[in-house]
Length: 120
Length: 109
Image (cartoon, rainbow over all chains, first blue to last red; front, side, top):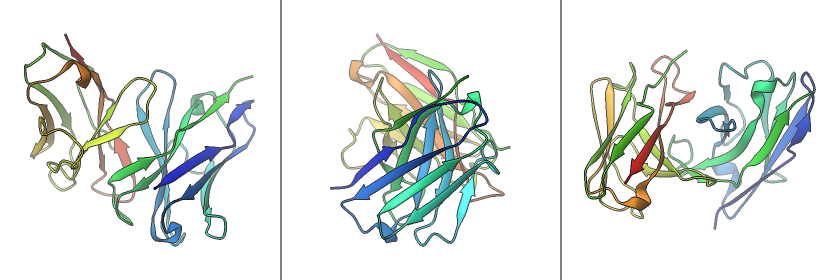
């Protein structure tokens, strides 16, 4: 059974940093890309970033490029999202997502989400 | 940057057919995916690769795509189908970045 559990959220001031973690279980971690998707309060879904199953490829939405870094540690079955220079508009629920197939865009398995609040 | 455009809201009576559209310049070449999100819950995929339905999704949900528009159709909409629906795809020039539409609130009453 696929499980994705996010952690590391909280309240942070604008300009500061935060690192989210996503611990995966129930599948062969190194065989799947992992995505981050976020949703601001009362707003729609926004795709944030993806890391390839081997970790070689990383892609970002324009809104976070240069500020956020996605990485993975296969020894810990964990994907990270390092968020620097945080802005008020980064306030959202952040979801860790696994596709149905290794590198597809069929985003099937979602974590429960973690809340990030950027506020002074 | 690439955008997918959806109507903010669609309203139907129970048993009627609901159609939700998604417009994007790259849709002739890129697949569309559709997600249902109920209040306080994580999204659930209802249609993938334009017109394929996951086995656990009711057959009243269907998808199609023609030119720059993808359409999610709910035939005989039920009260329990009331939710936000999002289309999702990738940019023509950058296949490695995803984009969600703005979402459509479906009201069934």
